[in-house]
Length: 133
Image 1: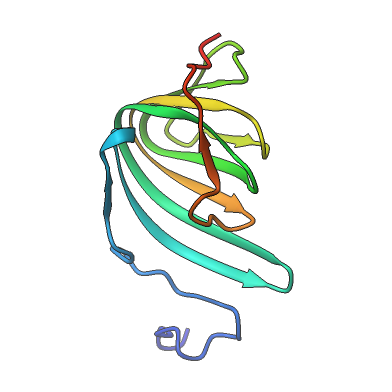
Image 2: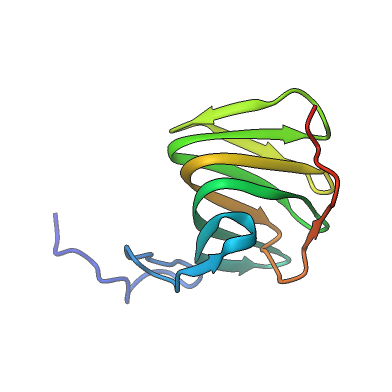
């Protein structure tokens, strides 16, 4: 085994992500703290990954452009998609939500949310009515 690579010799398009990367942002209206971790593009596709800590309820929303994958790192989250029965996720569970699906979530957890295509400001459309089933 050779000396560890610091990332400078990686192929074009590769990225090394170090712990603590990205600025931590407050989202009080969603009871959350977020930290964008990575955003990358290859050809016509793009993906973004964001770390989130939540303690409460996130406002109901849908994404105009992106499919999303939520991956729970710790704690528990409850999702309601399109007014259906609640779905409870715990650490190591994942949920994929298609573009345009109205959903809400709540709980006390840290999770990753992956967007394809990558998240852009204005992608989220918040709805006034709860989507509780």
